[in-house]
Length: 418
Image (tube, rainbow, N blue to C red; front, side):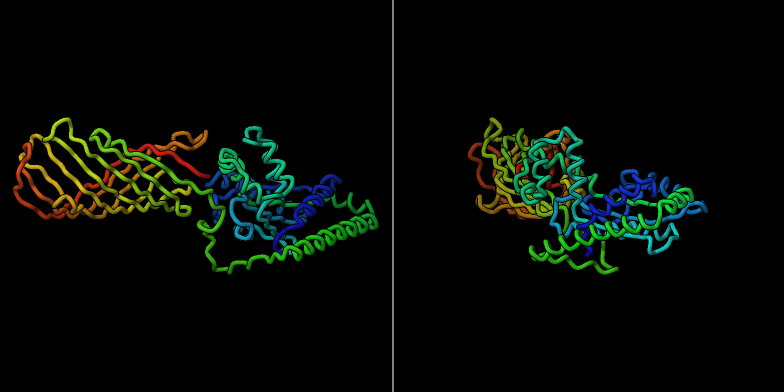
């Protein structure tokens, strides 16, 4: 079975061997970004820990009094996504680290063992038990002890889930490498214990392992679960859009720049996956600037499709936008007033804009944000020109295309949803 349901039994046997003084271990943990299985040396101190571990392991291999017994590679994922997809992600993580070991060490292939699991429940429980700042901690621990992942996802509170995303789940996106070895003194001590005792312990361990395998296989048959197919060797390991999906959110925001022009505005933004969102603003202003000869009246919208470079919808983004607006513009210093033709011929166009979003309360509820963006594009204008006086008469009409700045925003945002 590819899915390592027997991992707990394996670790119990390893701990038992250590307690008897027969085997020593050296280990290192490698961390991965959310949704990724590619090994990144400079992420979270990986290169420093791996270099130290590699130097120690190679020194052991050069020592003629040391015998390498077993190399374990154990990978898992955090539980946001579906179990089948996370199992595949853990498989890729284990294989990538195994490839790294093959490139840096020479050892007996029979001593090399790779295990992967979609969720390490024991690690999950231990991390939550040790962190007293987890919101709703006791309720969450109760669900973890029951191994009820469905209720954890359905009944989670937003503050609890956000805290797990930032502080618990990163520790679970990892691969553990363990070297088990024996020294000459250990081998002599093991021989003195006697062959009969060793055979007896091995038989008992094998019986427990086989019993655990039979029990898990029976449970799998009852549930009707079929493990997912393993990826091909040439399959891309970049599973960014398929696993560990974030809880859904939407945003309400307002652009501060139009308010001094007496133009009210409100926008709604919806997440469309891990790196895409759609924003639709509405702006409306029907007031003069305290004088009939000064106004910037507008009713329109400028929807945007945004590509985010981070999967937490903060930092830089690139957007394509469209524009549709009715307008009536006049300045007291200008001879003419401009209004869309017949009051029903809106300006329309499209463009690109760049922006950056700052998270204002990152260490708390992560609700508020500040968004800066600017962009340019093309606008088609068809408008009437009037003399800018009280009841100014019609002068003429014009049609023109404008190319230049057509978007600027300093917006305050608030996040809703999970």
